[in-house]
Length: 114
Length: 113
Image (cartoon, rainbow over all chains, first blue to last red; front, side, top):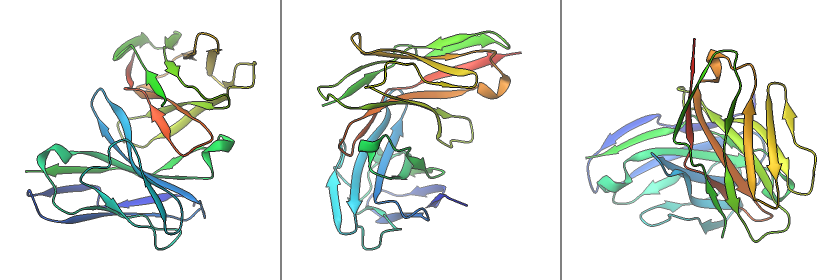
């Protein structure tokens, strides 16, 4: 089954404690990206990757890191989480957007930073 | 830069009736795509319908159709014969040849029995 898998689905952590949210896709997609969803703001892109070892900033990259060492995986790293990073996070993958490709989303990770 | 605006934070409709969700966008690109995504309470993001800016004909997918007005930069979603399962957040989104998918703030739709 074609899917994007994120883990964990729920996470509560304390300020400053490093965490990683994993994302894996089995569709051999070149593009992968991370979004955060906040009420009234929709989904905003954090980082994206066009292919292995190629990443770039989205609209709201501050406080986040990513890496793309393998085509299927695109983890999101919060080195020192802060309460303003409490949000719902989505990983997505697709073929190149320029062709109108559909973005496939993971199940979401609800992160709470206290 | 692209922007997408959904002016209706919440809407409700009676089961079996028709509802239209509004979306406006702004882009400097010549070629772009527009999308409507549905997010039910399960949080899963589901593609409802997509439209290529170069196509004048409005896209249709079963009970879902769009009214694409390119000059006005408007992209509304019409849901006919609303069903209880249509209750969800709906997001309008646009992209271009680049790598950014830009979303609106969402419209929460409640279908009432």
